[in-house]
Image 1 (cartoon, rainbow, N blue to C red):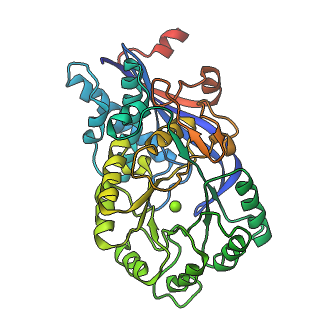
Image 2 (cartoon, rainbow, N blue to C red):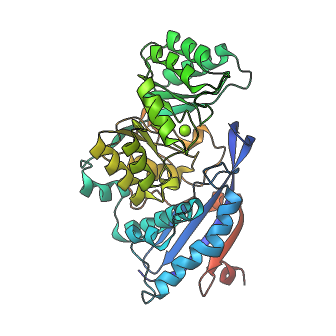
Amino acid sequence: MRLEGVEVRWVDLRLRRPVATAAGAHLSRPVVLVRVCTEAAEGWGECGAMAAATPVDPGVDRMWTELCRAGAPRLWRASRARGGHLPEASRVTTLFGTSGPQRMAAAALEMAVLDAELRAAGESLVARFAQEGVPPGPCRVPVGAVLGIPDDRRETSLVAAVDRLAEQGYARVRLKIEPGWDLAPIRAVRQRHPALPLQVDANGSYRLGSPGADAAERLVILDELALTCLEQPLPPADLPGHARLAELLATPICLDESLSSPRRVADAIRYGACEVACLKPARLGGLACARTALDRCRSAGIGAFVGGFFESGLGRSANAALACLPGFTLPGDLSSPADYLTDDPFSYPAVEDGAVVVGREPGVAPAPDPVALLRLTARRAWFGPEDPAAAHSA
Ligand code: MG
């Protein structure tokens, strides 16, 4: 496909409820999108970066700069070197380095190139995956929900929120914990819901050998609560510490922030630090990298699920199709973006009975609603000889 240009677009979405992060509570969910235009089809990609950077993931400002200064120009030059033709989606990641921003840029551009390829071929993403073991016909994937720490920090508020999710039929619930908010509230949820699959996520907030409330050794008490897994108890770099905890606790240790590349996944498995993997394509370098990481988990007998970054319907549709692959043994973060976004230019299939039936329309997801997209766009940049938007307004 001949590349005619690449657009980078900043879209201002809003969250229905504040999302608490280490950097504070945020109500906005700015999203950077990329669009590749070819003579055959156009394709859309979503960057996973959120408003605030974390020690592991770059923030949206950094990724706007990365995609405008390096990512989009690199895809343009790579196409020039191929006589004007786009590289195949499966090759896009190889154009980029291994830093966090480069992997995230590669993931967004890979999704856009893949979307264009699929549209040109009239093929859905899940049909493309069918060549890799996804059975033909409707693909129904279980959907998990995530709950943060309640604003009022009351156990009754947490239990009431879990009640609502259980009523909606979610296949599992993942609860955030931190030092000072761990054993008692999770025990209260477990007493109320003895059979609900529960995970807890500590976002790296405990320390081995600490004398305080953040002592990771204390978490052994969680073993009585029959949790599916304990996610990221220690800082991302501490693979030996996670391996020690895995020996100490019966609850399986899950890694999320530690898994920043397929190589890192292999390292974590080799250390014995990872018994369940939360795989996020946007962080790992895209769908191809996520599949490599999944293969490593599968061959080691490690369970896995698809993690999320509060994506729009585009990124979440890609994740839902990915979750159809054999090897994703646990429900992913695949709830409807309408649950957390007030506006979304992209659509997403309805979640029913705790599952979503992955769409079979051509492309990664249905094309965005142009009116909503225009209304929500804060800025855009074009890389190519002729900006169609500029020509339009002239
Ligand atoms: Mg996590």
